[in-house]
Length: 301
Image (tube, rainbow, N blue to C red; front, side, top):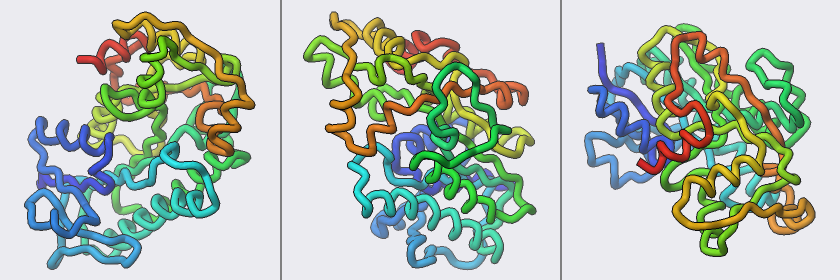
């Protein structure tokens, strides 16, 4: 059985962590990259999904394909052009990968694709979002995720498919904490929406291990990738302060100020999702970080 694993979108924060994990477990990760110069390396293959092109001869046999493609949701303001980019950067690669599998250009046992808990929309309160919930598509983030998942429905049924709805990713560098760290110099950590929105988080290591679990187990279907105990934005800010060596206080950022700074993208911090992870835990997967405090301690190591 092949030990090769294709990583589409493997150059980002999550992809780099998964690459390292796969290597430790004896796999041979190969990154699909738009940088043609890197295709000279054995662990890179050049592709351009927008042109339906991949630089391989014959058939490529791999153990799994992990699709992490997608422009960063919170990297730029949501202009009309940016919104189109957010959608296209997810849908086009998914369609192309499906075509590569259908035409047997790539032969694989399992496909692991990405989505996000934004699919649940804004769900105030602690009524836990589950994979079986009806999706309304009443926010932009929800609509993106719906289209994202529909595109991955095209993956042939002959391949075992796992879809991962990722929560707020916590990492030592990068991820959601990038908006918090600079403010520590001002001795503060912000919270939003009056502290009410719930944040369903996951450490980068637990997320990477969940993808590995998807390869090595026989699971299929859609799973939420979040830790055990979501916290509201005020609790999150306080836990972040506790994890730091600097003295700081948590400060509320008024909704009008968030909307003035971020425009429609303010949904990223104002929408609330209290998300359940019971389905993935029922498959035998165990989260290393049980609480938000444990999460912050673990990502510092």
